[in-house]
Structure formats: structure tokens, C-alpha cells
Image (cartoon, rainbow, N blue to C red; front, side, top):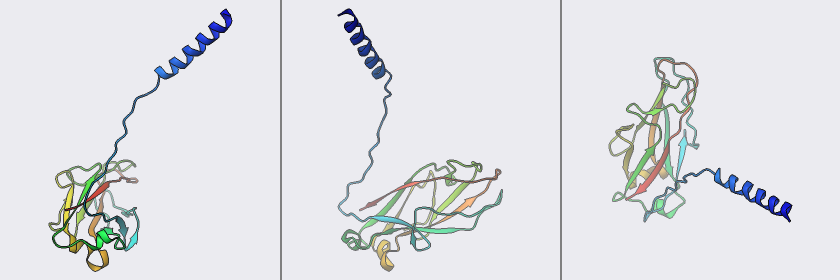
Length: 174
């Protein structure tokens, strides 16, 4: 009987010590509630693609400009219903600084990408000062859904090597 009690006590202690070592954590849930729903897809050179290949920038210089867009899915009635009375706002989050999108990894960790709007209501560079841009709803869906267009340009600084970064966007319709 003593052996069984000792075994049960040891088992209980083992279970309790394991739960005492469990780590706490957080989960973030993000979303937007809106009257209009219109899915948006990133595109590069007319193709749906979420990877923008920036090319090569010499140390201390810039790479060629690459154009990309965030296009509405025109098969959805919410997209088709946008008019000039609607405003489409695209807000960015990520490792932005005063210049643009900083590197998240890679040997060229001092490089950055300049992202500019090219058809927004007011064109601007996306950085910590300007993390969002607006476009009229009718222009957003013009030309079978051209969306909001951007240019991206990699800026090499002092370090050579690869550059990698990412940014998230949220689209709101008003």
C-alpha cells in the first residue's frame, strides 16, 4: 500500500511540475468590420503575386523601380459597387522607418525599400509618417479593377548582401 501511495504521489508531483513549467503567451486577432466587402490581391506586372522582386542595388545606390498593385477582385459585388462617394484606404504595418521599409533579415541589414503610391488621391512615400493612402472608390475599380498602384525601389547603403522584408496591409472602405 505504501508503494502504491508513493507511486501515485510521485506521478502527481511529475504532472504538477510539468504544468508549473508551462509558458504563457498571447494571441493577436485582427480584423475590420465594414459595410462593403471587396477582397484585394497583390499583383506584380499584371499577375497575382505577393512577392515583389526588387532586383539588385549597388552599395550606396538604388535598384530599378518595380511597380506593383493591390487590386480588387472584380467578381465580387462589393467591389463592383464602389463609387466616387466611397474612399478606399490602404494602411500598412511593418518595419517602417522615416525612409521606408527596413530590412528584417539578410546581410544588407542597412538597406531599405522606398514604397510610393502612384495613383492615390495624394501620392506619397509609405514610411512612419505616412502609413496609409486613400483612393476614390471609382478610381480603385477603374479599368477593370486597377486598384491602388505603387512603386518600390531598393536602396543599398553600406553593406552588401541579400535584403528581405515584409509588410502587411489592411483595406478599409468608407
